[in-house]
Image (cartoon, rainbow over all chains, first blue to last red):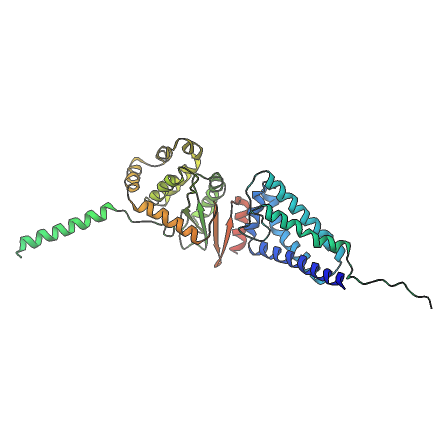
Amino acid sequence: MVLRILHWVCRLILGGIFLYAGYTKVDNPLQFAAALEAYQLFPPHVVLWIMKGFPWLEIGLGLVLLLGTAIRYTATLAGALLLVFVVIMLITYLRGIEADCGCFGVGERISLFTLTRDFLFILPALFLAIQPKRGRSRRPSRLV
Amino acid sequence: MNLPARFWILILFLWSTAWTVEAQTPSVGPKDLCLSGQPSAPIRVDVFSDFQCPSCRGFYLETIKPLIKDYGKENKVCVRYFDFPLKMHKFAFEASRYSVAARRLGQDPWQKVCEALYEHQAKWTEDGKIEAAVADVLSAEEMSRLKKILKEPSIDQMINQELALATERQVTMTPTLFLLVNGREKKVNGKISYPILKEYLERMSK
């Protein structure tokens, strides 16, 4: 029962995060592009591709997580993406570059808070990847 | 009162009015004058910028300058520049004074002054000689008018008004942009390269 509730909570949190993150980027793609450019990691044409395609990936992931389809795979992908974000943000932070996180729109600088927060988002993804089913107990089959 | 007295009073009144008009050039805020294009343009780009900020320099020279070149004459985009001199930049306020004063000379001299300030940023940031940076791009007559305008107290007032506007619009860094396209305004913190901005504007204006 507890596992089932935890499963639902993790799906809602993770799905909600990705949906919202994708929405803010679709709503203001230039802010997302500005954040990517501030990282000084990608050339403009790559930033353009990411700006156009990535928000829809986030929205798609968010929807699939909320629907509960192929949870292990979507959660693994979500966790991997989050890990990549955290690593990129950490590199930018350690390089001393002042940049917006670009996670949820305008005005969020990369800081220890945003790094910690985004790292913690990986936890529900990890849980769902390890515990993809909704906590159903497996009873041994009885031979009649 | 006899006629000669009335005549001289009228002359005195007209003379004092003319003197007042001559002493103050009309204030031209960035809302009245676009750095490029006209206020009637369908797309508006408001930029809060600091002339001593290296990111602002890069943004102006690499993004705004080509934007002005490609879209300014066709009046597709109105670029409005608001001064937001940061306190940590020693000469930023003074540089803003030159920009605000140049607005009163017209769009073309204002563009030239902005470009000169950004082009020679490294130099005047070191030695504080802003006038020298600007003198090369203006004619002798324009420079003379600019120096007169710089003495007016309304210059500093205008900059302070723009600082207050920045606070109102929650501007906390430079450059900060506000893009108004199809009636929707979006805020962007930081600079964007021209290919990305161009692609976005082309897509939004269809």
